[in-house]
Image 1 (spheres, rainbow, N blue to C red):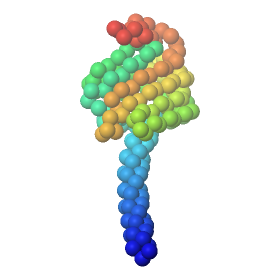
Image 2 (cartoon, helix red, strand yellow):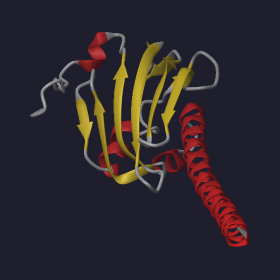
Image 3 (cartoon, one colour):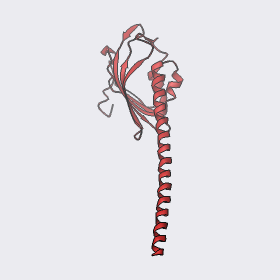
Image 4 (tube, rainbow, N blue to C red):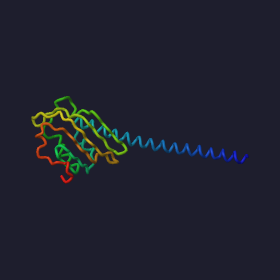
Length: 178
């Protein structure tokens, strides 16, 4: 009977130690995952703030991977790298002046899937003047994909452009071959 008690006690101690070690391992993994998640969330927040302020174009571009792919689904424009993205956005062109407040856009929704490393942001671009022509406000939805380095590798924009003449000549990106 004494051997049985010692065996049971040993079994319980081994089980307890195993649970404690396993629990610590899960806690460390959970903390590492939380750090990675909070890092991605911080990058997304910084990206949004930088884009809204529209002051530092070089910093704005730093959020993108060199092989960024962007599709503007309504305008019908696609880019395949950071240089083309810089030419497309080109904050120094057109003498843009925000007419409604100081931010380029306001947000109505931000969804971040940290496991898939994807975000969806929705909002409204403020009214602005571009080359002497008033435009906006424009509602938008943007989908972003991030790589493990927290750089944007894919962006899909759905922007309700007005006036419609802004989009004349764009490709129909509903067909993969365009």
